[in-house]
Image (tube, rainbow, N blue to C red; front, side, top):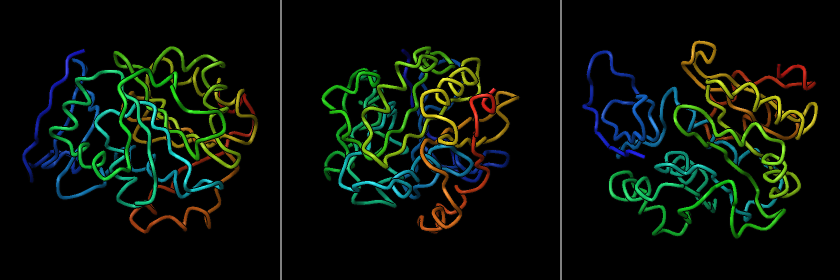
Amino acid sequence: MHVFVTQFPANVPGLPEAMSGAVALFTDDTGNTHSLYHPERFLTPDGYWDVMACIPGLVACSQEAPIAICGLGGGTAARVIHQYFPAARMIGWELDEAVLTAARRWMGMDQLEQNGCLDARQGNALEMEGVADGSCSAILVDLFSMNDILVELEQKATWQKFKQKLQPGGRLMANLGCFDRAQSALETMAEVFGSGSLQVKYIGEPALRNGAILALTGPYVSSADWQRLPADLAFCCEGWRTLRTVEDAR
């Protein structure tokens, strides 16, 4: 895998707000941004990382239980979580050691590790090695290879394994992207987690391959539940819909 990091100039006309002055990490030739870091802010406007970082405020279980991040990347979501939920403990897996090295050097991951909130591990996130069943308050899934989600995310066994790692009342949120396997993975999630236990949010225009499909497991999140989030994350409550049946995912 090729890993390269660049910093965008600030205040350039036409440059998306999230990119202005940010350090970006890329891992392939598609031009898709793998991770973002800005030394002076935490949120990534119009990005999916902020939405994924809401999950500590949506679980109904022990806040002391760790959050598993399967597909840690450069630590973008982890950094937002720490900013708004400083008591959260995170375990993250990244397959490529070069990504972790770059993130520690240029994207602030070393600071998260040093203060003890993040245990960043090099390894296969699908294995979740060392994590006992029923031990996680939340799981974030953000696993891609060559411009699409991993083929394993189309398989029931993968989601069943993730489900087993959650505490009662815990939730999983997955970024399914907007490419070929996204719909199949969503249907598989609906089968594993059950009718009425999956909510979906579309960011950008996934149908045009410009955006992302996010899926959140667990009971319906009410407006009152969303409003308990930090004010800076209030915008993340918009656009969710519940899949009542597996057919709704098709």
